[in-house]
Image (cartoon, rainbow, N blue to C red; front, side, top):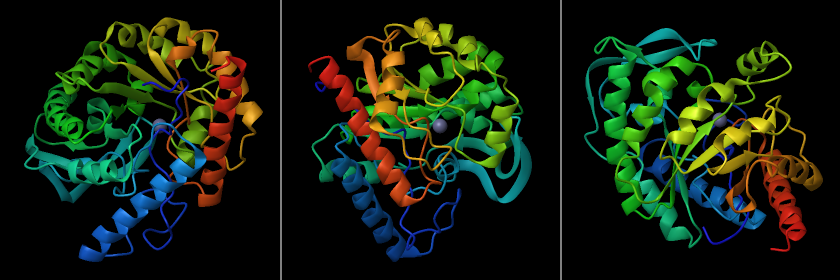
Length: 342
Ligand code: ZN
């Protein structure tokens, strides 16, 4: 990455109302077949344009072609039954109707590669692509076949690696794996979750990132956060393992969160996508507020490793709010660049 203090978002942006009802998670598509395909591409163009207008340095698809960050990937795999769903507790926190693993999981065809090629055609900027991580995938399913979260995670890791290699060949510069489940199942992360993630990035020469957050601004997450006390030390449990791993970038929730930023000391040397935008409320940060969070992170992250970002995806926000937050992120990073005369 040549630009210093490069800005990017975690992944999702709100979809246009003509594509899917706004301010809703798992929002159903309003179009069908060929119109849906075209609609998704148009939405991707708009989402890219919003990022470019805001001056972001690393851009993405805004996740305009997916309904959900985990299930849209899983539903393209064989071995998973989407008809007979089960209700399970996700992240130990909220119940959701999820698909069921009924046989060996395999990737019969590419999932996002055409979308990534389409994005690549639209811009010369570095592009980032988000995939779900193996542990989070396992935690978003009912497994009636492997009967082992670890075994299933390894199978998913192999499938993710196939997809990641093709995304890299399509010109993706950073492949990010979303692992919100890393913040909940520490023992599994340390036993096999991180190893499975490293299997997913095996052989890649583009940059790789892991995103670990406290979730979208939905009620179940807000309620959960209230139970975490005044200091959120979840990252402390997993950072030593991440520090030893080959992952290049760690994307974290830092703004308005109760995460003590001195925990970043545990991953010193890694590039850090510092979440400096809160996605759990609609108030638009001032550039100075963004800069203030970045300054706090800079006590533990070298300037060349600082990647200003958002706490999580912005899919559930109103579009004008998301736009305001993109601009705030960009302006906040600019304040820091000026302070460092870069
Ligand atoms: Zn997140």
